[in-house]
Amino acid sequence: MSANPLQERLDYYGLDHLPQATMTGVSRALKRQLDPALDEFYRVIAQRRELSAHFESPQQMARAKAMQAEHWTAVFRDGVDDRFFQRATRIGNVHARIGLEPKWYVGAYGLVLDELITAIIAPGWQRWLPWRRAKARQVATLVKIALLDIDLALSGYFHNSEERVRAIVSDKMGTALKQVSAGDLTTRIDGFPSEYQQVETDFNAAFTILCQTLGNLMAGMESMTSGATEIRSAADDLSRRTEEQAANLEETASAITAINASVQESAATSASARKTIAETTTRANDGAQIVTEAVGAMQQIESSSQEITSIIAVIESISFQTNLLALNAGVEAARAGEAGKGFAVVANEVRALAQRCADAADEVKALISASSVQVSRGVDLVGRSGDAFAAITRDVSALSGAIQTIATSAAAQAENLSQINAVVGELDRSTQQNAAMAEQCTAAATSLTREASLLNDALANFSVHQGSRSFDSAIDLRFNQAA
Image (cartoon, rainbow, N blue to C red; front, side):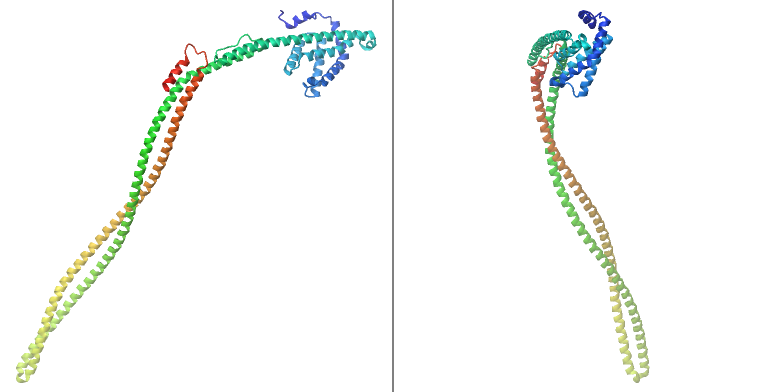
């Protein structure tokens, strides 16, 4: 076979050494009749729906007509060269892409060649010669029948070829898919026709990747099962610890609630004691004030006693002077004799009265002295009482401050304990939720282990190449241990 497909065809068709005059003559005929021939051809196409459907608009049909005219004109102008081969190949590719069957393309040449053969055999006025027109119709009929024969032969060839290819593809693909359905992923396809070579390559590549993927998946099942078992064990342990923690937190919450109630009661008692101490402080302050006033009164009594003592001293002095005067009067009465007897009696009475006054003054003085001593003692006692009341007041004030501090601290502790109680309650609820989640995690881990076992059972139905290692037996053993 020739290395040049075009040259091979030229040799076979006898077109390798065409006279230039022949090409020129055909070229002149094309100039005269190609456009009318193509017009007639595209008119027929426009009337057939299966052909006109390949054109989106009249403009697209006009562009196709212009390109086809250029293709025909160029081959007879420039010769059958590589450019012609490339254009023809490109046209065939377009027909294959849009789904134009060869029968329409071959038939189109019959329509166009009918006009062109007439233009060559009966050009110009010769087309009116009956024998010329008959000759042209004969040649055109021969060409059309030859093209029809080619069309039918090609259709049979393509049909049989497609059937043969379809049978090969169907048989090999069916065998491969049957093996796959049986779980054998090691199956591969070979011997596909060249036009299906990409399908063969893609199929084999896809199942190679699938085998690798399933092999990796099988290899990962052991660690997955081990992880699921560890997760389930950890979840069980977590669930148990969470339940214990929940019970401890519940007891702690109860204890803190009791402590909170006790602290609340202590805070209330401290507040009551603070109120009582405040009242006691007020009373102590009132008592201290009264003692202070009593001390002042005692001091005034003492001062009055001293003044009375001074008055008594004056009375004693008067009594003494009166007694002296009475004594002098008695002496003078004695001197007067009988005439002075009455005066002597008066002098005696005055002296006796002065003596009684002196005696009474002595008694009053003695009483005042005793009273002064008692008043002084009373002043001292009252002063000491005042000092005691002042000390009591200070102690009560200090006690009130201490109780105030205790009450404030108790209130703060009560508030803190209330907050702690709320936090512990929230923590208890969270722990209960965590316990529920731990149970769910345990259930999920158990389900994961079960699903992994089911997945392993499903994978065990497939056969893949992974060296000499048997994944099925290794994974089955691991799952049996996990179960």
